[in-house]
Image 1 (cartoon, rainbow, N blue to C red):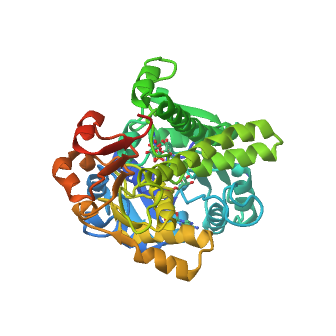
Image 2 (cartoon, helix red, strand yellow; image 1 turned 60 degrees about the vertical axis):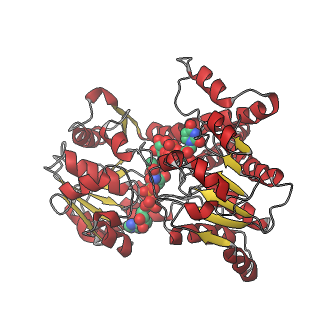
Image 3 (cartoon, rainbow, N blue to C red; image 1 turned 180 degrees about the vertical axis):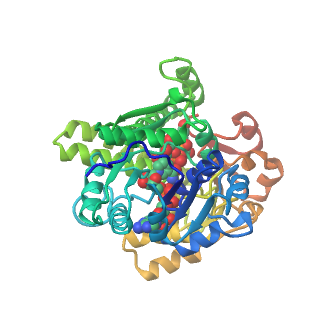
Amino acid sequence: MAIKQTKMKITSICCIGAGYVGGPTMAVIALKCPHIKVNVVDINELKINLWNNNNLNKIPVYEPGLKKIIKKTRNKNLFFSTDIKKAVNQSQMIFVAVNTPTKTYGEGKGMAADLTFVEKCAKTIGEYSYSDKIVVEKSTLPVRTAEKIKEILELNANPGVSFEVLSNPEFLAEGTAIKDLFKSDRVLVGSDQTESGLLAAQSLVKIYENWIPKNKILTTNVWSSELTKLASNAMLAQRISSINSLSAICEKTGADIEEVSNAIGYDKRIGKDFLKSSVGFGGSCFQKDILNLVYLSRHYGLTEVADFWHQVIKINDYQKNRFTRCIINELNGTIKSKKISVLGWAFKKDTNDSRESASIYVTDNLLNEGAEVYIYDPKVSKERIIDDLKNIWEAKKISEVDIKSKLIRLKIVDNYEDCFKKASCISILTEWDEFKKYEWKSLIPKMENQHIIIDGRNILSKNKMDKLTKKYISIGR
Ligand code: NAD
Ligand code: UGA
């Protein structure tokens, strides 16, 4: 059932999913294409109310530069609402940017992508479309999902209505989303290689051409586009696990990972970016997308390929666990009743997102060992931090009594100075710029006398910290 008309002139679009991708991407399209009406819809009423809040500090996604764009476009050509049916009905092009988490049940549990939300969207689009539509996969999806979406659309379609499904994966990184959207390295549009598929792709290309140079807009077939997204994330995450595995060798040999990484990066073929050793990568996507790739490889009987990519996740887990073990070892093998502070909860700086943040796993390990844990983050809310921990406790089926005992030993503070008073150890888990600016010289004496600082992001100067503390430990140095 291909779309019958020639290239659509797009004047009205909507995006289902008002999250970290849907919000910023649609805000930028609205800004760059004032001739297009952009509706962003979500089932989460609370989130939509926050997007519509007059106080721009309350919008649900913190991203540098986003508030300014919302201020310029909201209620002009950018609208947030829960009325999904109306938005679908009014739009010529519908982006699907809903979450695609790892399955927590049934076949593929812990590996495959859960496509429940995507399938629901396809059904809704099918049911509430009364004219031809172009449906755009913005969510990250397993290869060949477009086929399933098409099936669901057709099964639920009203008489005479046709659909084209495009893949247009998003490559923005949180914390730099607006910068990435303004100056994308590339925009990828995958379509069926039929006449109507290629025309639909051109309609989407036309939107991006309002601000992205033509030579950066790539068109491919749908399956290449879907796979490229998973592969890009896997290649990026692989670099972090590679450098983190080398950081362990540095610690044994006296080499310095910062020097090694810098020198490696000088090779043009390798490049300097994404070689920063850390406590391990977090974020909602790297782990989920690699697991998805591993699952896909196993599904096609490609065991060696699956094992290769799975190792990227295993090294990441190893790095997070190594970090906690380091804290325990430095505190003479026991941290029971000792105050350990965690600076930074977000999975990276300049975002309020903490999904899969290393802090969650390190904190859980510390609480398991009986420590009193103080947490400070400049942007992540207290409620979010508690929810993150409760989610992993729930997944591990921890008893109510144990949860209570952990929560009693957990303090989330608004003032970072509270983290230092009588702390046995300060651990840095996010590379927030403000941590570099602290008056470390006056803060360190407030700690217990061992003065251990463990820097999981290598953000502080080793020379300076070695002078200020009895023990400054960083990754791979
Ligand atoms: P998110 O959880 O922030 O947002 C998803 C939103 O979809 C939620 O607000 C949820 O309520 C809504 N939703 C779910 N089902 C719905 C339905 N049936 N109808 C209406 N709304 C529905 O997720 P995100 O971080 O924006 O990621 C979305 C997708 O984009 C994922 O597939 C992710 O892998 C991909 N992606 C994310 C990033 C990133 O930086 N976060 C970058 C590139 C790609
Ligand atoms: C990543 C990709 O960079 C985006 O291109 C992609 O669109 C996105 O995933 C997605 O699909 O969701 P994001 O997770 O937002 O973006 O942020 P990154 O900058 O990639 O950082 C991910 C994690 O790796 C963070 O915890 C970060 O601190 C860590 N990291 C990054 C390192 O430890 N070292 C590095 O050198 C780089």
